[in-house]
Image (tube, rainbow, N blue to C red; front, side):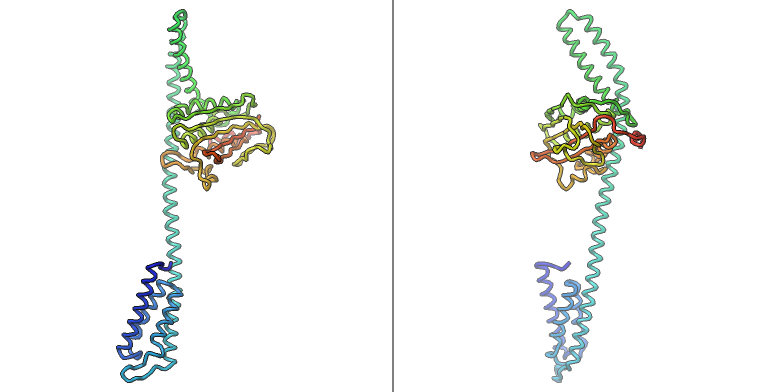
Length: 390
């Protein structure tokens, strides 16, 4: 890269001054018959190093002019140079300038390649380091999940005992209105806790696809219940527009619930306090003009589709990163805040169900995620059923 701006001007001025000074030195020393003439190669080499081939050529011609026909062979004797003498010298200057310019051109190109390779290596190292952190985080989350499943089993027994006590109190104080209301509140609280524990157990158990008749609305309700704490902590309003007339799907309830938990948690992380999460379901015919565009390898095979939309009021996804959101370990969150596996795993789960997922930014802000599942069974093979064992 050539020097630019003020640096270039100063460099040119220094080279011109150097060449002029050497010309004066040659004249003062007695003329071109003396060895001082060879000093003129210095500014030619410097000019070629700074300005590559153009600099080498221009400085060589300038040096040839300074030490050309106007510079005597011997100043004291007044002997002029022969034409062949200064032409040959100028030719040598040109050869040095051209060779020097090409040499530094080549060195500069190699330097740029090395710098690019270094930058790519640094970036790859940083990406590998982040990927290692995410793998560690993913392993930690898996361990936490296993611990949570074990704890859930342990908690179910005390809950059962508490439920027996609540039932006893309800029967004993059925004629006491205040005690009956307290017992009913306790009963509702125990049942809610039991529902959460049951959801954790269902979420953590299946190691392969366990296809059953599944109500998508029920799956969404259970997923919202499991992320309820995160929603309340950020004061996020949930708006549900669930079509209760949609048909059922043949699906692995636990794995589809995992998909929606991932989507809800992504939305929570993308929204600040007081955000709005809108979840809606509806049925549609495959191939309708209004059908959302499906992303991924899943997709339907015709017939009825059961559609779920998850819309948030978050910051959205940068357009240049939209096509990378399903890449393993890709995340827009900071290190330690996400593994980058949620959407990748979610898409794989949906592909195994012959379903599809589409993610796009909303015009009014935030992200819209559309999940489309086919109604009924779509021919899952044995390899797909073993997805959880891979």
